[in-house]
Length: 518
Image (cartoon, rainbow, N blue to C red; front, side):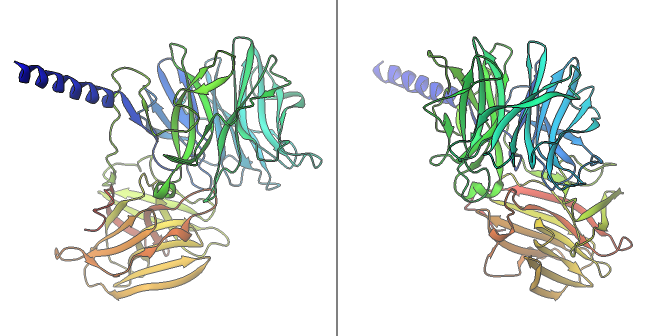
């Protein structure tokens, strides 16, 4: 009898642990490099978007029913707004009078300065119609947020270059239709400590207007981004900064840094903050990934995160019954009439002309002025440990194959050209051939693996003989990172439009760190 009771108690304990595990999710909730996330709720559905920087299409758009499982459904813009030239940062979604607004930052074509535009759609997944530049202020105005204060709309942004003043968070009244600034900008907060201040969002609870904002360094190897709060009894201020700032940070544990996000309210009134974070260790090389943390009010009227001020990967699911789906990799067999929404290209350097025909991708494009390489069609990596592979037709002199792509001057290409294998590195614009050999096969398979975000190995398979490694030593891909974004894997073509790269499939598979090679 005693043994039976013990067995039952052990089973109950195991069930309790399993139930607890089922009631957790693991950050990031959106995997891959999607900085500066914005999130809104319409009914029971959540919509999020994020920075696309120098990748097109512009501002990837996601949807979720539970804040944990997100699916990319498209982009805010498939075509570049006419007033812009590059640097598509910090979109902010806003739902107003049955319309969905996107306030976004981009560099103005005429001046090269970053300013704020606005676009409107009938639904988050509908076509956004651009209404042009909305805020031109100081040397640059970025990171907009729109707040409805009892029927009066306000837009806030980060401003600098204001008569040699420090960075400020400023605001101005908006017209009722959200398309025009009315009145003069006014200051909300000033960066007196000179530590940085941006990525703000606003909301009201009780007697207070709360202002969440990011401070310190957003990007790169030394990022120490964190989240701070200030409050006021009026939207216009004055704002009091919390003495215990920051209220969320990395620097130890799961994340190196975190910040720049939006609070969204669940149907039952709970507050969830979606911001981006660099995962600690090799996860850094996946980029700034969106994480979800729950907020609550303190008895003295301030804000805190339920898990404490250290950002955590594992948190309780927002809603009972939610089960986080595992990441299953990415594959495109090109048997549709259009590309999957996961694909992106580096628009400052090339216009891409992908054609899908009879289960194959025919990739070519047009290089822009100053570009020297070719056309890269890429996806966001979602792990620091993964493998990419494709089958490519070995025809013509154009170079076509796989790439790990930072930008036009920093990339690796592993492909075929003129009947030979070619592995090429471009670093700071300088080309180096790392491997070259005859390729008699008409349609070889190519593969590379990435270990720990930087360690690259390259392989080919021809004639069903299995994978052959082309270098014994791993190549370090660390230098392919750009200051505000990470490298992306994909397919590549360099040559004329009459000699496209022809691909039968593309597959990305994540794997454990102890199983990196075929």
